[in-house]
Length: 165
Image 1: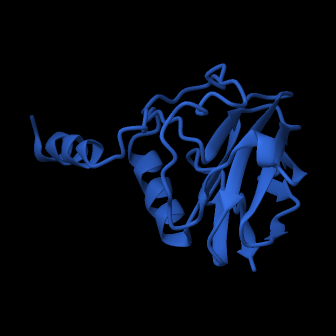
Image 2 (image 1 turned 90 degrees about the vertical axis):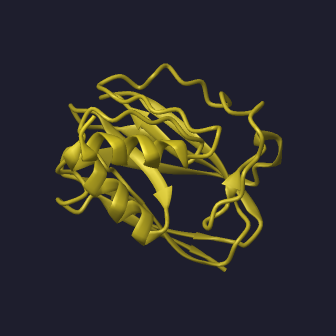
């Protein structure tokens, strides 16, 4: 193994046990509540939400102009929301929640390894013309982000902001 491969193996070993790495052109056939039986793990930007506790649904549209609409979300601390994400474009897009630093680092990793696959409760891959969702509890105040981390999309400005008060 070369050093790059060893570095990736070490990085993957540090992922939480719920992380499953698999990417590609498909939306992975993920059902909206596929992670319901996984242990709930806090992140710096919240935790997977309980669909029974959703207080509102926020519709977000992704298009091939590399934008999210809306690109600014305001959430009350502790609120559990359903992000209903539709892809109005002709290519695969994704919405990944995270801190600004984590999103930037993940975008860099995706450029180096474009076939890298992942399926976490804080992200959804949506094929052209399809809709997906994330149920998330924003239990920490602050400013966080969301982005499409497919190679070239993040760099083209396909990002948004979540303000939790």
